Image (cartoon, each protein chain N blue to C red):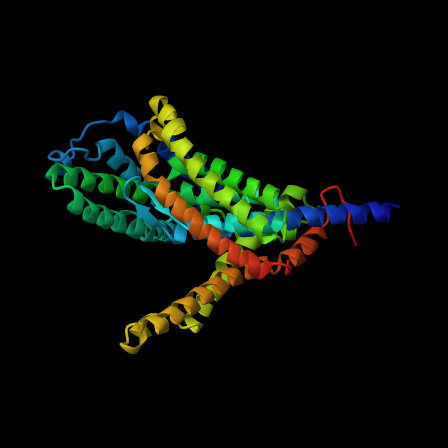
Length: 184
Length: 247
């Protein structure tokens, strides 16, 4: 009886550690994808990267909770190095992006469902940053100088690069997901 | 005489305290003057507070974390500055040359990128030092060799440490090796040949290049996840703090 309880405790620990390991791996890859490949956007001072690919793939392969944590941790850590003002926006937007993609796709094997979830992910990426930069940061910047780094015009200018970033990351994520399909 | 080595926890606290002004601004934001002679002629120039903070952070990293960490931080900052500041400034200048001609715009743009460079050269070495002063290997060793068992959160730290170190020291070098073996460089060079400028040949080459890139990205993910189940099982078998063993 005691032995059984210990084995079930062990299984539970293995599961927790497995999830922590997967989150760490994808968060680190996302961090590398965000920091190593940075193409600057002069209009906003932001930059284009492929960190989203790993958030998308983690959510598609392992579901919403893993997607949420990968999105919140990896890209936010990357922003902490050099762009600390955007840590808050990135953690919220990309965490939500991973969560929603995971919820919609539900580790599904259907191409259309995955395609739809990625489309929603791109929309969250673009709309999320727009809302943060045009409204939330503008309001916060009035009282806290630290957040006064963007405005409505900069937010408008960033819609196109963010869309391109989302589309490119989604195409790459879809292709990687197809490669991994059934091989988890 | 050998210089006394500070405990790593003290180093982390010192660097964290030096990092704080980059988030909250104080006390350097209180210095708003532009007395530094080089900047007095230009608008939007960095103020003395920003420059003082850059100097202060460099001195503190050098004193608390040592020369090696300081140089490493500067290298990473320089690498990031290439894409974010120099390439960014280059693109912005081209864009501005096409659409505007005002000399004031160029001046304020230059100062924007100078400010950005100062920001990166201040914050990045601090962030890098913050992580470099933490002796992850020693922490991992202490956890594994603990005689009284360890708490679940420490097992999680151990797992994170193993995964991150695996990616840093094994996966990334492997990926670079695969990329060099796949002759990416050769592809780019051969693309310059007259024969290879044929649209059909080029299209096939680009397709192959993209396909290989995709396999490299997928390999990166696969290599990163490869040992996680084994480590999860292995770490879970370390005795718990309350003494329960799973043998």
